[in-house]
Image (cartoon, rainbow, N blue to C red; front, top):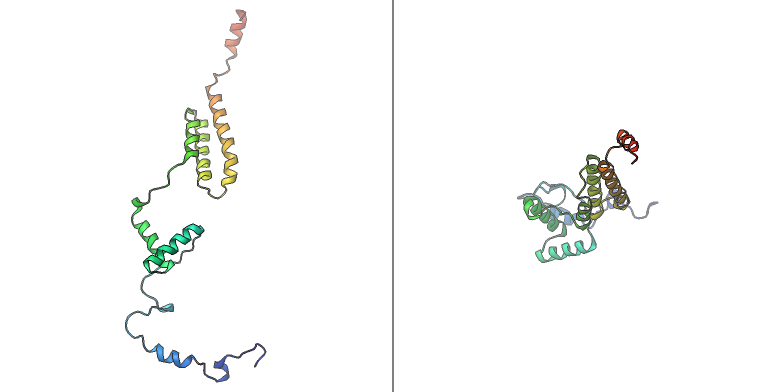
Length: 173
């Protein structure tokens, strides 16, 4: 015994009980690609890591069990199928919040107000989809709505004409 506890049997000159089994099984696989470890050459692939909700993870696990495949193989097949046929999975549609923002700012036509309207729509999408920073976007959404309405009121107001006011004042009006 050394300082660390059990010593490695290879260093002590003793044979591991598994060495005979390894020597016996290592010569059995001679034809075709090796399937295990670094010799796997079945299909080139890339590693992907993702997060799932517990509900989606359970559904994926159940599907894998029904198919009799591993969880990673089932996930890989689903992703490959989705990417092969993009028409099967349409782009996400806008929800009620974006529709409400569009309806509220439907009458906006002034160029500056249109910019604020588009910002408000983008913020509403971020809030609906719960993208990163959606809580901050919710606060900015109200400010953007107010800015669009204010810009439209400013554009609708007739220009201040001092000559017209002086002319009306001369006639006593």
